[in-house]
Image 1 (cartoon, helix red, strand yellow):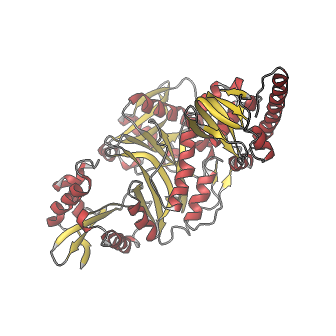
Image 2 (cartoon, rainbow, N blue to C red):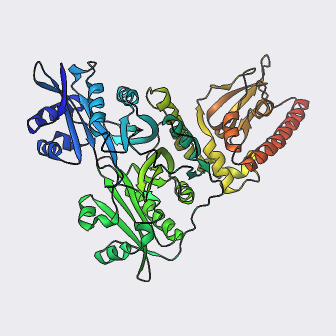
Image 3 (cartoon, one colour):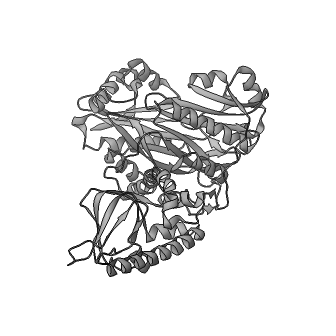
Length: 536
């Protein structure tokens, strides 16, 4: 029989041994290998630590915890984490029992339960989903183990959490697909409003930067916007918690100054083990100062070399700040309904992440709902790296003629990246043609069945498959990579999603596709008349 109970001081060595048995020496949080630290966890009011005991042998075979102060002190958010079971005791239902007991013990004490599940362990995610947690996001490559791993974020709500939720949040279009999916998974009415008109903050010029001092601290406290009203950035710390608390949490503040006058500050803390930094507060007298501070923070991260990613939790009612962060390279990774408590209501939060390492192409086998979240989240991270390539060849891409920089960014965000080795078939004659391709590098030959010579060659800066894309008919020819090809692809479904919010982009695309197709057909006719040709 398995008994789930609160951990005692005499259990800490057994808990340590469970983590060693489960992770070896690779676990990035050494406090779970430290008997003194584990003993503090046992007696901590901010953490519930449970163990699973085999009553026949008296042996502790599993452990799990709930961290009760993940958010700010009034957010009532708890993280359900650190679940580990001895390898020889797995498949006995220990994990499920630990999860159920954690829920029973804290559901009256919190509004939001949060799970950060390692995607390499789908069993953990299955336990969470089976016990009412819903996948709402994925933070790519956040955790450093033997290799970097992504974390799937899941939430569950208790008490008055959803009754206090502020409805009809306003988000930018890039956040919308993730928000809709997260709300659906959470059983919440999909009430998100898309703010297409939200523009990024302008940048303040001529300001200086300096680290926060004791004098600066008191000045910042008097800037009411960042401290109390209209908060747009959330985290586990805030300026008014006091300097001692901030220093004990390894926090940093960078202040914007103008001729000695303090105009605002950005605060963040750092997990040196995982190489992750998190902005928890943004204080600014004016929006341009906020952008100035965020740019300085991002520049600091980029220049470090030891930071893998930066994250920031933004109000779902702050589309201008969401747009600003998007321009600074941050992308939506999670949509967390009713995540923070502000004034008299709970606000949805958008977790935005900037990666400083190469994103991973695929994720392990996930549940259908978690896989859907992963697909929506990872696509923009993979597309992000091709945006500079598209902009670099903008003048050569007929499909982009007439587009401004914002339109190009939006188009790049809708594209996926595909690669083909030399000799690979990109698409075959007669196959359905719901995708067109923008060649970023490489070359492809166009061939017809039964024709010995290729009809032509398409190179970087040109498109493939546009005729079938326009007509929704099958491909009229086969395209084969004759040099390694990297292409940006767009399907009908992806274009339709984009055009719901930006019909101006669609108008330009279809006009340019038609013009390019006409020019290509004319070139083919001329080349065929001369004994050589090129096809589509």
